[in-house]
Length: 398
Ligand SMILES: Cc1cc2nc3c(=O)[nH]c(=O)nc-3n(C[C@H](O)[C@H](O)[C@H](O)COP(=O)(O)OP(=O)(O)OC[C@H]3O[C@@H](n4cnc5c(N)ncnc54)[C@H](O)[C@@H]3O)c2cc1C
Image 1 (cartoon, protein in one colour):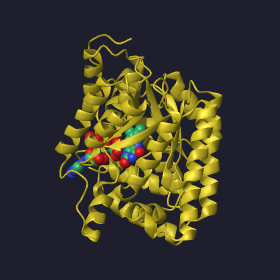
Image 2 (cartoon, protein in one colour):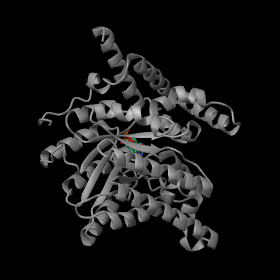
Image 3 (cartoon, helix red, strand yellow):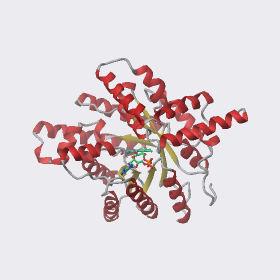
Image 4 (cartoon, rainbow, N blue to C red):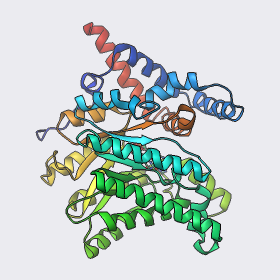
């Protein structure tokens, strides 16, 4: 258990203990390239073009972005990563990273694959207590958007396809509940998010009790209305006697939201600057940790200050690091300095481990590359930490 002293997130010996020097050198090369936004932008365009022209680009993606950010192409291929993480007391959250599919057959296939992640997770819930549900992987984006905009405008065929989405969600939540695996609903673009929240809330009411949280929804704190949503859901949970599973993120669709608002001529639901997003994120951490009687919280961030603040609040409120109502989460391939140092200090930590066929995981990988491209941002932080660890190993011949 941790003392009242804060955790040293610069401890690269702990952060990279599971990585060989060769692996670190490769990661260093990848993050150093992502420090150049032009390379990321041009690379993303080239990858998209290659996909359109059916060029065989899998091999290069596999050896670079895929190896850095994904666990493998199948659940079986992720077993090595799961074991490695568990050795550092870090749980795995398997995430079938297939996106942008269109047909009912694709959605049924994705639903079966997510079911497999639930069954696989249920075999070792001490290592893999969660599974992820991204609704746009089991239903049409177009349909979700149309329903959110105007539910009455769906024709009979569309209504039946919309019902299929709800059936798939219900089936997966029931599988999670029956098999003792918690389900995290991912948050997506604002023009489909109200539908996702409504379905997620229905599932929380159905499966969560005052003692058990089986379903979590995601609050994107870059949205101006998220804090109000949290307060609102809190009241609802109190009145109707169920716990809210709250995964907190800042939000991953910043550029898409700007473009959408511009194209549609509607107001942008996202804060105008990062300071406001950070403020909302901090407020949410404060609020949720102060109300663990009603909330189970997953703090999903790569931001050190947010992790530091969470720990300070937990210490102030005498919340034990081992309290199962609080979980920290990061994505595979990023922010090991947070995951490994938090776990070492006794906090509950999990990594999202995306997997899937390489070609299908490309949208996910491109989002990671875009997120990491800023000179001021995450990439340079990763880059500096990798550099520090490589220099330390060279100095100590370790
Ligand atoms: C385990 C895990 C699960 C995740 N699941 C989801 C999910 O379900 N849905 C989802 O959308 N995202 C998800 N994300 C991604 C997340 O939303 C962020 O994009 C990412 O984590 C970066 O934010 P940060 O808190 O780590 O750090 P930071 O680097 O401190 O924050 C970057 C974020 O700040 C916000 N921001 C940046 N500039 C501005 C600006 N000008 N105005 C307003 N806001 C700004 C954006 O949200 C940006 O992503 C997940 C992340 C993790 C670690």
